[in-house]
Length: 401
Image (cartoon, rainbow, N blue to C red; front, side, top):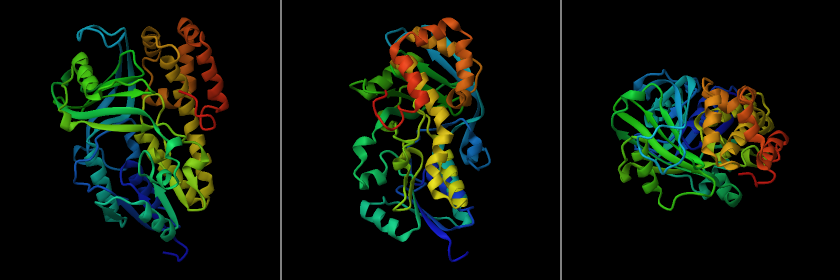
């Protein structure tokens, strides 16, 4: 290894941190890669993010032994008029979205196996204790680069006392349950029910599934567990035991602000949830976090660490614009019938289309002129359109919903 090799500390050993360690270990100019993870990989870890819609981003063989337990065809979106309904009532709109390659995973297993393969390659792991603010400062002094993959809110933000401007926008609960999921094991279900958020049931097999519910914005239930139980009863999946339920915050940003992704003076980079990277429409963050880590490794391989924020922006801007517009169908209208019409207009597209390809989505909506007219017949929705293509909504106002 050349004497000029840069040593890297990765803070956080979940998927974004593992992706960073994996990619950086392949960079010629990088020396030691050391991962600091507060939990042991054999411990029970948070099992959120168990639907991976582009499994090729994880460099493991897609086998049950590596945690890839259900190869799915896609997802079914079911839109209802509200939560005050009979459990057997029919949805007012249904949309089938493709997903290739997509898996429902045992995320604990995926992360453990990924860490094992990296350890075999020489990546060093320190597990079982959290990085304190004092230790963080020592690591910044000791290592050439520090990759913050500590989640939301990021340790870097805590140390720099910028957490208040960097809070989560979505809250979700989930758990793995036992039940009968044979009817839709190949096409997991997502339930929209008239609030800004959704519930889901993602089968891992015909007898096990990850189920949950999430909310965006400020209007949330007084009792989260009660709301999850009610959603389970309405949508036909088992009510999880309270002790099995995880609750977590999905970040909102300001994730494309260069000040929130790179601290040049300290050689610190933020990736994944730590950088606030998650889809603002449906909360997905696994693939986005992994991509951010790969972009960082590419920038360092090119000898241009300062390019990371711009490359991240260019990679994410189409997805964020589309999410801003799609979320407007909820926030500006609060009209389940309109959401059902939009969902049906998107039938047959892929998950990647509706998260990363605005032109395909807009073309589908324009093919339904009545739906398009209803969407834009609102000042708030028109404002979102302007915001999305001037980027004023992303990190310089903080006022967008």
